[in-house]
Structures are given as structure tokens and as C-alpha cells.
Image (cartoon, rainbow, N blue to C red; front, side):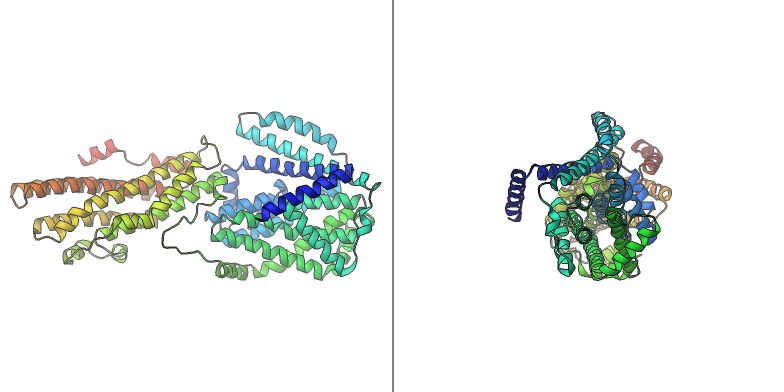
Amino acid sequence: MLQKIFLPTIFLTLAYGFWLSPDFKEISAGVAIFLFGMLSLEEGFRSFTGGLLERILKRATSNLWKSLGFGVLSTTLMQSSSLVSVITISFLSAGLITLAAGVGIIFGANLGTTTGAWLVAGLGLKVKISAYAMPMLVFGVILVFQKSKALKGIGYILSGLGFLFLGIHHMKEGFEAFKDTIDLAQFAVTGVQGLLLFTGIGVFATVVMQSSHATLVLIITALAASQITYENALALAIGANIGTTITAIIGSLSANAQGKRLALAHLIFNAITGLIAILFMQQMVVAVEWASGQVGIAQDDYTLKLAVFHSLFNLVGILVMLPFTSRLVRFLEHAIHFVRVEVDRPKHLTDSAAEFPDTAVRAVRQETEHVFDNAHGIIIHTLGFRRNEVEGDADLLALAGAQKHLSKLDVDAAYARSIKSLYGAIITFISRVSFSWDQEQSGALHHLRVANQQLVESIKDVKHLQKNLLHYINGSNLPMRRAYDRLRVEIVEIIRGLQRLQASEDLDGTLLDLDAIKVELRDKKHEFNDTLGELIRSERISPEMASSLMNDTAYFYDIGSGLINAAESLLVSPDPETTKSARSMTLDEDQLSELVG
């Protein structure tokens, strides 16, 4: 509803401005070209997020200071705090970084984005950058049409820079010509009233353009053309800083609770930073004058002074907020909770996670672990045990023998409640990931998709096993009861072993243990077949009972194999090279047959 009113209003305002003045048209075109350049630049950097950026991020966020430094450096290089915010939200939602690390990155990104004001004020307005824009656009467009992902990414970056430079040029020319038509400086408002009014205008402009960088360039070019006063420009810069949180807020709408917490942290930080700048404006201006004098900035160079002010109040905000980071994290965790629902829903499959290869794999891996845990719960309860019995060291065969009656679990209802929506969401998520399937992460997604299918098949098999299990466990034939006790205990023993492997950090040892479980499963199948032959020969069971036990032994083997194979895809390292090496160590079907046979 808001968009239906908001968008036409903007279009009508722009159309009226175009009719009123051709110079306004050039300024608007400059803003549009600049924003398109930002999109191209972001697209270019996204091309290099197929693993490198993700690995750097994981290593660079081990503590708060590293996170802060990464935020400053990455935003300085990419000139887009919006992209850094989206990447950080996706990584946090996928569990690759902690909330404290995400908060540190956001703090740093706010300082890093101030370098854009320095570049525009110090270089963009003093050099005819449109002359550099044309070659960049020519070479950039040529590279965009190349098949190589790296060349295409470089092409987008060059094109983005070209459009940025071209947009700045048109905004500068538009404001210079605008002076002959209308002097916007006559609408300047002084004092506290002007400070609050122009802060609000800065917030509004940034919300509309969804780029504080674009708003700052607009402010700087207008200030350079004397279309706004220095005092009002400072207020507009504060508003742009607050308004930029809209990107993180929009990016968190589809994120989980962690992503929403980070967006709230971004809003809190920028709001407090803006409030500090407003309350101590006079002191800030004095500090800017002193700092400008120290670095040799001319007394009348207000554009560079604006850049100094922008960096200064963001730095002050960081210094004020850093000591309270841990308290902020606790507040965010208390304020935004994970929502519990009767039907289990995906926790990690967010829109932002789908945009980057490593976060997509991590999100699917975590959601598959969710399915893995739920599947274990359904199978354990169907076979007549409790989770705490499996997680402990209880003698499961003794527990099974002591049970006088086995209750029926509605497997279909449990599947619908705990598995179905998760499985469907995982398949849908994998089908719409935004990166190319020739990347190394696609292999990991394939294995995880197969793992989910195997878990679903294992639940279907245990449902088929349940009918005879209930009949014979609750029946009077002691040999059949003992045989089915052995079947269900062996399945639960496999689950117990797999759960213990999940806690292990030794990859090579984990895979060797998996191989041992595979061999043991084959051994148990042969033992069951020998037991079945003995029961038939001794005539302790009827041919009908033997047929049931034979079929259910096959179900037992399928359930165990499915759980083990699914665990193999989950328990190996998320790192592609390590995974490839680790998989080469596992035993295939022929090798298993040789060992068992």
C-alpha cells in the first residue's frame, strides 16, 4: 500500500522538476547514473564472493578489533556499506560469524564508508573525472561480455567506477548551472531548527535512494556549487548516516533472528552516533577546524571539511559504543527471540544466504543438521526409546527387554510436523541459489540434497518396519520379540554412534569411524540372516514369521545405510578441498563387501 503511494509521488515530483528546469534534469540523471554505478560495482564484487571473501571474513572476525578492521577495510575497497551489511547479515544468519563479530563489522563499515566522501571531495571535484569515466566504461563493457567469471567481475567493477565518475560529473555540472536559475542557498535554515530539519531531509533522501554514498555525493557537489550552506551540509551528512540503516533493515526482513538483531544493532549505532553529532555540533565543528588546520586543509575548503566531519563523528560513535558492545549483544539477544512454532520451520535458509556460495552451503548444511536431528528423534521414538536413553550410556538391549508394551507413534504426523516443510524448503532453496553451478560449492549442495533424501527414505522405511515391530514386540512369540528387539536396538545404536561423531573435530578419525559403522552394519545383516536360518530350521517361527523378519531385516539395513550416508555428507569438513580428500578415504560398496565377505 505504501509503495503504491510512495512511488507515484516520487515520479510526479521528478516529472515536475524536469519540466521546471533542465539543470534539475541533469542533477537527477547524475544521481541515477551514480546509483547504477553502485549496483554495477556491487555486482562486480559479488563475482568474487565464491569462497575468497567468505574465507577472509571467517579468519578476520576472530575478535572485535579484527571485525572492526575488516568492516573498515572491506567498505573502503568496495565503497558500499550496503553490500558489506548484506554479506554480514547472510554470514551471521548462516552461523559463520558471531553476533559480536557482526556488530564489529557494522561499526567498521560506518567508518569505512566515510572514505567515499574524502575521494569525492578531494579528487572528484578537483579533477575532471569524466575523462577517466569513458575508458573505464569502454573496457568494462567489453569485459562484462566475457565468459570468464573473473573477467566479467572486473568488467562490472570498471563499469561501476565509470558510472560513478560520470554521475559525479553530471551532478557537479547540474549544480553549477543551477546557480543561474535558482539559488537553493536562500532556503538555508540556521540554528537548531535548521540542524533538525536538514537531518530529516538527509534521512529521507537516503531512504529514497538507499545509498548514503549517493546522498553524500549529492551533498558535496551541492556544497561545492554553494547551493547549500556548510552548516546545513553537516546536518544532511548526519541524516544520511542514519538513513543508511534502511538497507540493513530491508536485508534483514527475510533473515532469521540473528540477521534482525544485526539490523537493529546497525540502527542503534547510527542513531546514537547521529544524536551525539547533533548534541555536540558546536564542539564537533571546533574539532573539525582544528583537524583541518593540522592536515593543511584550506579555510574555505568546505567540501573537505565535510569529509573530516563525517569521519570524525563516526569515529566518536565507535569510541563511545565499543565499550558497550557486549551489553549491546546481550540486549539484542534478549530483545529478539527465535520464534517457536508447532510445525518446524527453516531456521537458516534466508534470502541473503542464497546470494553467496559459502553462506548458501553453510545454510543448507545447518538446515540439514536440523533435519538430521529431527529424523533421529522420529526414528528413536518409533522404535520405542527416549532421546535421553540414546544420548546416555544405558544398555539399550536391556531396556528393550524390560519393555512390556510398545506404543505406536504416528509417523506421518511426525514427518509432517518435523521434516516435510524443512525438506521442501531445502530443495527450493538449492534450486534458486544465485551462483553458477560450475563452482566448487555446487558439489557440496548436491551431497547435502542427497543426504536429505536419504533421511526422508529412512523415515519411510521405519514407518514400514513399525507395523510388524508393534505386532511382534507386543505379541507372545518370544523368539520373534527378541529378534525385533535386536533389530531396533541396532538401529538406535547406529544413531547413538552418529551423534557422538557429530561432537568430534577429528575429520579423518570421524570418517574412519563411519567406515567402522558401515562394516558393523554389514556384519549385523549377515548375523540376522544366520539367526533367521536357525529359527526356521528349529521351527521356532512359522514361514510367515520368517517372511516378515526377512523383509524387515532389509528395512533395517536400508535405514542404517541411509543414516550413515547422510551423516557422511554432514560430518565432513565444509572446506571443499578437505572434503574431496576426506571422501577419497571412505570405503565404497565393493570395498565393504570385500571386508565383510
